[in-house]
Image 1 (cartoon, rainbow, N blue to C red):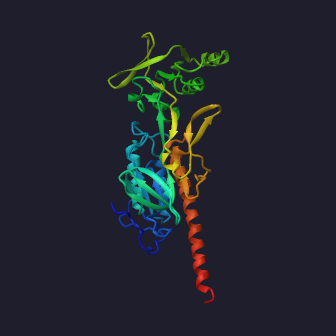
Image 2 (image 1 turned 120 degrees about the vertical axis):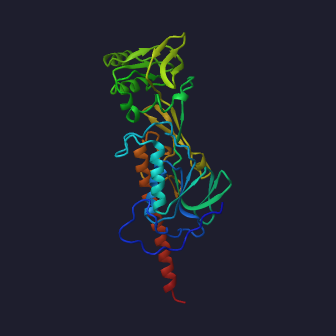
Image 3 (image 1 turned 90 degrees about the horizontal axis):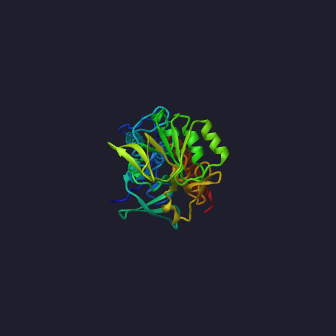
Length: 355
């Protein structure tokens, strides 16, 4: 596919901005760096990437989103704790976001970025999985994370439906039902006490978690949380839904949902070519997984590269990821404004310099 090249400077935008999806969106401004396909290339088409792209497009920047089309929350029936979008199916939310980006002149392309490097003249060169290369003045990386699930047979097949990890995302949907908590680390008791807020039918399966101390047992008992010793060997499903948790020895305990604590690994391979490595994100002494370090606006240690969403913060929910995308996009636009201004000043000085 032929790479996109910036269009000439558009006529001034009218005072009132068009509604998203308007038929005649104004042309984006020409790219800041000479011969760059776009001013901002967004890698990742989830909530963070689309929110950032919409913000940049509204700022009259040329922007292209590369979307692999594999959202992390695809198995979920709805997005929760997203104000005014409660319960919206993930695919529907993303479709609305893509329409908004395109309504402001942004572009979206299906694909996966496989490599990124600096250009000698400034900006970045990104290679896609089909061999296409794209150039951009700035990068916004919103590639999310991968959930590394406990190796229990039957668990992965129920992930996102009856196997859950976030009570704020799914607790309401399983309120007052039988919820198990699969212990895999030192935060298992804390996790069980947290889920107790939504139901009084919580069972903590110790599985591979360390044995709680006496004080922790007392706390769990005071809240009515049952504790079951032994390793979980599989989940039993009936009609595609969780029915029971089976222990070594064959004992089965009925459950409507099972809470787990995956290891969250940032999808950050694309950034290694730019010298950015993931770091551990901790909750106290517990290692939750890995993320790309960045400042509050998403700026990384590499000038011109921003990150937003779960690739930078493992605990970010959908609405938080979208907000992070907006913050990063505003920072990117401000950085581009500074570059535009430096070039304008240099041009003005050259025009008035003595011959």
